[in-house]
Length: 171
Image: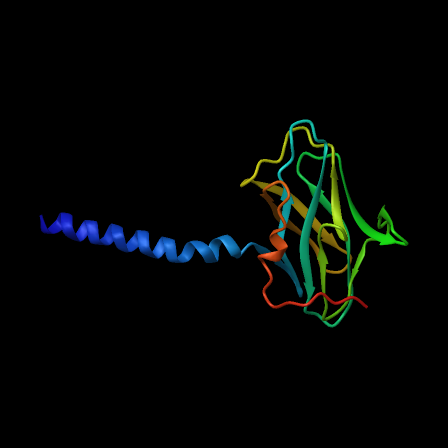
């Protein structure tokens, strides 16, 4: 009986530690590449038949030199482009950034709905909420890194719940 009780207490201890660590594992979704930090890449779940999706994340440049996001790729997709969406005189426009997206030294640039983002083309199956989508991000100076986009709910904006006191700066 004593061994059983010790085993039961150990199991409870492991369960408690797992529950305490779970929030940090859920919210610690980011990647580092040299002096660049890529925070919480995400996309939205897509309905059946959709062949495009948007991708979003923050890039913080802790270095002393500007860098430039030059490309993003996603496993299994035919094309991914870096886009800018903006509204001028009441007219919304979206265009690819052919020369990439500058990331000034000491600044954070946020790719988010209605602003800078990546457009993913050629989906052959839906993105399902709760899954991860593998990709690669490439910068002019820092090089490339593998990343994963977390698939959030349709209509989600997890950037709002992942604010960690950083400020978006543009030059």
